[in-house]
Length: 186
Image (cartoon, rainbow, N blue to C red):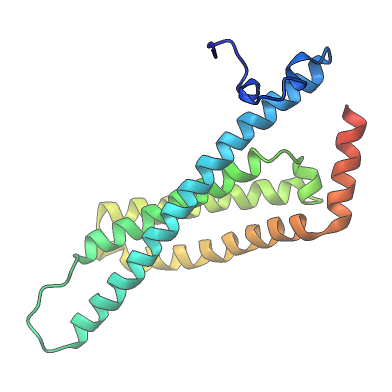
């Protein structure tokens, strides 16, 4: 029976890893288990954001059809609700993006040569997605235009971060260097 003191990886039936005298191996396995749990929740929130964006796409289509038609039907959702969901979802996704990189088992230097570039991009992503969300929350009519302009700039920086992450995941030289670094640490 599993107790509170039993490590998460001890639920496996292998038994070999739990009985190793190497404390560093146990520490690394526990660390990887925690990161796997965090990454699972980040992936789940990313999927929720994706689903919300699909719904927003459909609602945007319905709102545009309603605005251009001569029918007297009421739109499915108000402009204010639509924009609040849109901007706050973008902010949540920026947080997920930042957390995914921070909780990565790879060092930030193995992902990009200049760590300050990554830090500035993440700072900009979070701030540039929070500011429009707050502006739209305060007054949609007054801040709608500037909020959309800020969001467009933020989408460009999010694309840069995604490109950096994709490059680091697909570049075999970076993967080999990261594996060698992990072997030297152990």
